[in-house]
Image (cartoon, rainbow, N blue to C red; front, side, top):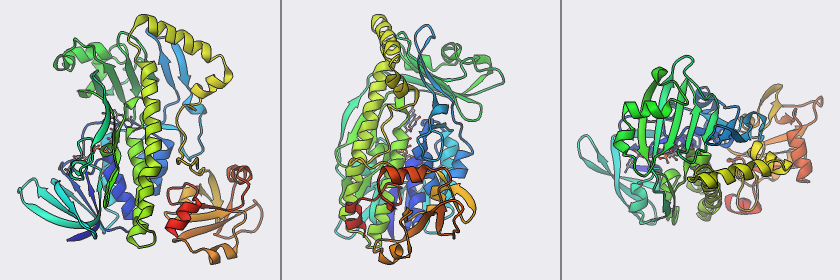
Length: 493
Ligand SMILES: Cc1cc2nc3c(=O)[nH]c(=O)nc-3n(C[C@H](O)[C@H](O)[C@H](O)COP(=O)(O)OP(=O)(O)OC[C@H]3O[C@@H](n4cnc5c(N)ncnc54)[C@H](O)[C@@H]3O)c2cc1C
């Protein structure tokens, strides 16, 4: 049997990847070893860019209805005194939603899997694992094993996408190694449901207590998430006992009104695959990179991988782009992922000080530097988070609400899944002269001017400001909503 693409792994990254391929009409087989979706909440937060990617997959409403946007995140010292605040309710990066959302991973994964039912050309097979693969000039042959019967079958696909997580079989089969650091300190992650009045710390809080660094936060659906660094002498089996968990959570939630759904010990890593592509095989998500969770960017980075690669693959499969376009996947994604990982590691250094004197100095210094307005803004408005940008400096296009055909909608809902050409300078000749892939053309007009369904009114002024800042009157947007460069045009045209 031959497919365009085999996606290995139906965790959140694999499921989203298959949805994006589905929207682009790519014949896709997804294989997943487990028979049921992950029951365990691991990832907990996602950003505005992640939501925009779910939107591209046509799943924004489905996933966002189960999310909760926190108002602020606080860093407190050992005495519970706040020394830094990220005021999330004051932040708008202009991508169409709040800067941070909390979610319940099992619900998210269920919504992503349900999304696959929309596509007759996407098949999900669970209880099936990738065993090995070989490549030739034309395709990849994957050997799959049915875990029920033990039977092995061969499937051919033009491309294979390894979304099979940290211990990726795809990565090993492609002969790609991981480099980086694994941290020695174990952490205890506790998730649970809170009853009425159970919450004692109502805000997302990084507890920078040198004796026991911890992260605590209310989550979506009356859930609460807590993570505690363990001490070297603590026994993982002992700290996960109900009595030990109750003692640890007590300062933050009332243990008598807190139903623990998960208490596991884990260690974190800062690892990256030496290559993300081996001819027809690509790595995405945790298979390609893993980072400490302090910025909540592990999963988000995997979603960006999917958004970056899937449109390029769709063009390559339709022979609308040369193979070299696929090389831009790693070239564009690796630097951004590394920037996120570095910021996450730096935050960890602030958060994880384990010595009383060093912690005292940190608290004093951080309070002092925030008297400088620029530094205070950097912290308060989350400006220390790397921009959604490509290595050449192109930043993701804003997503304001616009009016088209008399209806006010988010920009991407108007643009659709393909390329888009928009701006005050778009006219009939623009579409006529276009030699690129399928695209939507939208002329920006002033409010009050007569307009058609191909005219866009920039009711918030955001786009007008963007065009003025960039001194242009037309922009070509790629399907992942980055402005297209001449290089993309040459390769994708
Ligand atoms: C405690 C903790 C907290 C975190 N918090 C956050 C957060 O707040 N925000 C965030 O963005 N990220 C967070 N992360 C990271 C996030 O959980 C991961 O980045 C994300 O789950 C990776 O998704 P994935 O789909 O790449 O891999 P996975 O979720 O690991 O999915 C891989 C899938 O592949 C399947 N599979 C594996 N091998 C095979 C095979 N050979 N054949 C078929 N199927 C196979 C597996 O069964 C699995 O379903 C956190 C991680 C941890 C541990």
